[in-house]
Image (tube, rainbow, N blue to C red; front, side):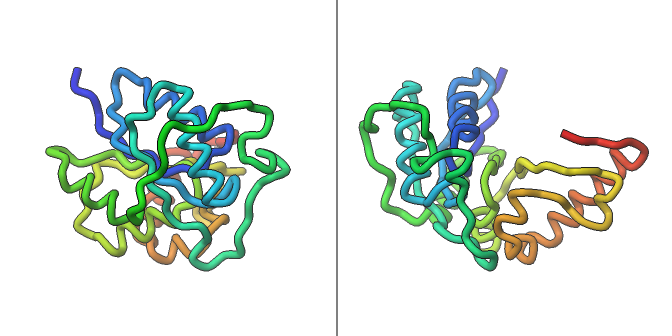
Length: 199
């Protein structure tokens, strides 16, 4: 079975640490690289955490490139009350074996995507700042799918408002991703208009 090429844009965080390990070790995925964004902690800390997780997970051949430290529009919000002052409090991980790439995240992502024979699946588990900039600066970037995590309080209310934590963290990104978000809302409304959907 051919493996799907994916790129992970994240802000580790305990939850994103698990996403890195799952994506990196999945037999059905080929993790091309990781970009980081400020969110669960500062960009400096989320980038360091990604490098640590890759090292302890035996995945330190995968590149990490830092992206945007702050939202485009919204006030900066991090989550030390959830993820601690390091972003991975409660763990005792060794220092990583390598450093992040010096290149700008969206530049490196565009180069990597362009070099692939097939479109890449782009997975975003943090705020969508990097994604909005990537698709704005490089509209020619081909993605098979764009997946991002979200939490909806009630999909029956989806036509009025998208209750998404990662969108609220940088509410400037839907301005750049307006068409994409509109299509997502329409699709979700079609799928779940007759039932309450909560998690």
